[in-house]
Image (tube, rainbow, N blue to C red; front, top):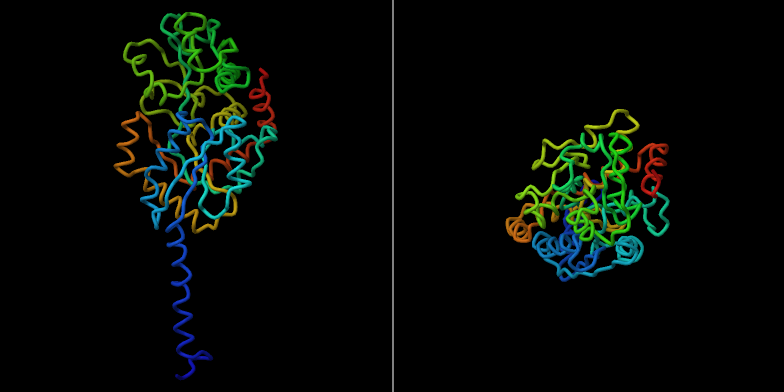
Length: 342
């Protein structure tokens, strides 16, 4: 065999075949493997439900059809799951996680329990965009946000640092509402019972998808009035209800509102550790995107009254970068509000 510009024909053919040989293991990597999905909420919780929903369907869209198993790591309010995935789980594409959407931003607030660098994580996607709303119970005199600007309105919360409290304090600051917070309720169920008893007049931080899935009769029977939305994008069900971004008057207030509510946009996020080879992140992202429009997956979600409004992994990563780029002065105000201050 004659040399071809310094190479034998056999060597040339081998070099041409090399990229194909290199790519093949990437396609075959998941065959015979097991993907572990780490869930940052207890069994039956919202993040658990979305995680198991994804896990039941995603393997069909991954080359090699790996097995999928679930592990609930709930300690630290969901921080155990993200810490384990980031610091302990193998960074090879066989471990992914989901946890409360605010936890990836803990380092911005100085929360030392969350030991991650969110900018280095492999963001796979989000199955839903959370639109939080403020609602008033029908026995109260409040029907619009303007009413809450005129008179003090009592809202139930679990504590000064809860999402409900943060949302209410944000609206008091940027929209001149007169929400007064009544703390100490163990959870949302107890706040709802307090609304029905007349102890409080509403709640500010109720996911619209949760209302539709669990309290549809409240809408049908006009038991609640929706006063405001806290989201970067309005929910199509309630376009007439003002968003907090419609209400801000200054650029600083807009930045503050975006900083505090932007995590809602990635309502049910899924992530892989830092360092997973990019080609495997690409496989997981593609499988996620295909699963999100899979008819069987969507039928499963509908059967459980679970809302799907998917966001791809690149967009989630971009949102995380945007939040981490918030000016420090705005972050400090956000930290004060989220930390229980006014």
